[in-house]
Amino acid sequence: METAAEENTEQSQERKVNSRAEMEIGRYHWMYPGSKNHQYHPVPTQGDRADPLSSPGCFECCIKCLGGVPYASLVATILCFSGVALFCGCGHVALAGTVAILEQHFSTNTSDHALLSEVIQLMQYVIYGIASFFFLYGIILLAEGFYTTSAVKELHGEFKTTACGRCISGMFIFLTYVLGVAWLGVFGFSAVPVFMFYNIWSTCELIKSPHTNGTASVEQICVDIRQYGIIPWNAFPGKICGSALENICNTSEFYMSYHLFIVACAGAGATVIALLIYMMATTYNYAVLKFKSREDCCTKF
Image (tube, rainbow, N blue to C red):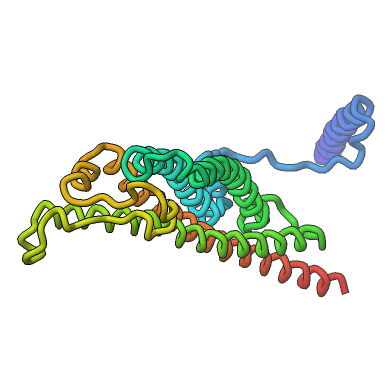
């Protein structure tokens, strides 16, 4: 009898516990109606939580952004800006110095070099236009390099290209090629005044050391500027000899113009190199655009 009574008391206690648990569950469902199918999820411990150091930080973002920089176009832009600035700035000042030397020493009559003065003035205006154009063109090519480089495409997600984008890249290739050929001509043309000033300078050095020329006297050593075709043959005096020529070489206008023409020629050469780099970069970008467009067509079909 005692064992039966003990069993009855244990069963009644279990019923009370179960009924209390059911009441708690019912109250929970009444307070949160949407949680009837609630499943228990264990609370993550301190070791299971994500480490904040494992998430990408500022350093990783900087590395990712630096990977999207078109370094070839960036180097070409810096080189192009530097070359055009040297050519335009130094060339402008050197042309003005050349006119001053001609007016003071080689052609005293204004009508003899009037055409040359007009041409030099026109070239100075052309220099302003060249500087403005290449400033805008360099920025456009740099932007085109940013938007077509493969690293930037990875940063901005899925690759998308259109026929218009490929045509623009092809147009930049053609235009850069034409400008490169034109600047080869500019580079060759800028070497002409360097050659002319070098001949005058070497003649002045010969006057300073006449023993290197054998029996020739100082006054027999001359420079005829008319043979270069920049002033007409009837210009007076046109030819300078001896000590007068040496005095010209000692002037600040001659020294400054000679070295500025050298720097301008170097700037033209730097611009040619920059355009060659631009051609390689734009050709690569066009090839990437064309390859990616074919990939997209193949994946669609």
